[in-house]
Image (cartoon, rainbow, N blue to C red; front, side, top):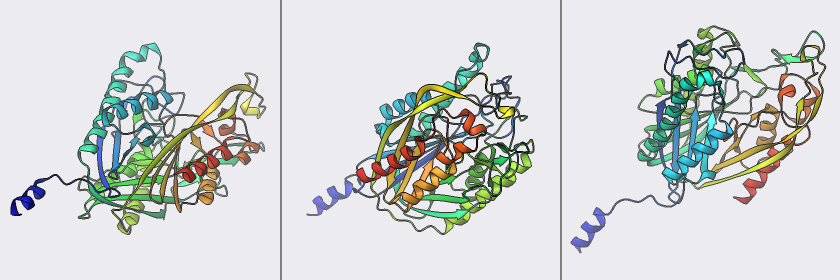
Length: 416
C-alpha cells in the first residue's frame, strides 16, 4: 500500500480539464539604431528612422485549459499584415501545436515602428534582417510563454482613461477632416484581463483600449512604441515581478490621443502613464478564478470593394469612387468563459465596437483590432455620410462591414 502511494506521488501533475494554466513572455524587436528603416503610418518618412527613443517588443500570452491551448501575441507595430498572419500563424501552429483558429496576432498601432509591407529595393538589404529577427523572436516569445505555463487564475476589470478623443471634426469649409471633435463618439473604457498564479503572483495584464498610437506625428524619426508602448512599459515597471502587459487596440479608427500628433515625447510619456496608472488600479481590484473553458473560431467575411478615382480632389472634397476588388475581413474569436476577445483584421471605427458590445450575449466582449491581417479602415454605416480621411481610404463599400462584423461574431458566439 505504501509503495502504491509513493508511486502515485511520483507521477507528474497534469492540468485538470477546465483548470487554467497561463504563461507569458516578452522579446525585444527593436531595429538596429543605424539601419535607417522606412517607418510605418505616415507616407513622408521613407528615408528611414534616425534614432531609437524607446524599444519595441513582442509580447506573448499562452493559455491552456487542459484540453486546448491558445495564444495572444501583441506587437509594438502598426498592424499585422495578411502576409505576416499567414506566415507567422503557420509557424506558431507547426511548432507549438496550437490551432490556427486559437492564434491572435495583434498590432498596437504605433506609428513609430518599421514599415511592414513591401519596401523599395534599396531598403531591402537593411529591412529583411529586421523582419527575420522579428519573426524569430516572436516564435521565441511563444516558446518561452509555453515553457512558463503555470496553474493560474484570471478575471476581468474595467476602468476609464481619458487619453483619447474623436478625431473626425467639422472643417471650416463645411466638410469633415482629421481634427479634434470632443462632441464626437469616444469610448473611454479601459478593460484589463488579469492572469496570476495560484499564489497571486502576476503573470500578465492584457490591456484593451481604443486610441491611435500617434502622439508622435509625421515629423518624428525616432523608433517608439508611442502611447501603447509607454503604457505597457509603465505597467510592467510598476507591477514588476516579471509581469507582461500586452496591449490590444479596441475599435479606434476614429480616435486620436488628446495630445498630438506632434513631436514632444513628454506628452507621450504622460499619456502612457495616465493609461498605465488606470491599468494598475483596475488590476488591483480584479477577482480571479482558476476555472476556464477556452473556445476559438475564425472566419472570413467579404464586402464589396471600391477605390477613389484618380480625378478625386480631397482638398476640395470632390470625391468619386469606382468598383474595386472585394474586401476580405477576418474575424477571430477567442472565448474564455464569459470573456470574448473579438479580433478584426482592420481599423474599425468606435460605433462598430460599441454595437458589438451592446448586442453580444457575453457581458465582456472586447474588440481587438489590427488582428490577424489588415483589411484597412472599416467605418460604421453612418460614418460614410461624413466624408473624411477614413472614408476616402476605406476599401469597403458602405452598407456591409458593420452588420457583417457584428452578426458574424454573434453567430460565432452562438456556435461555441
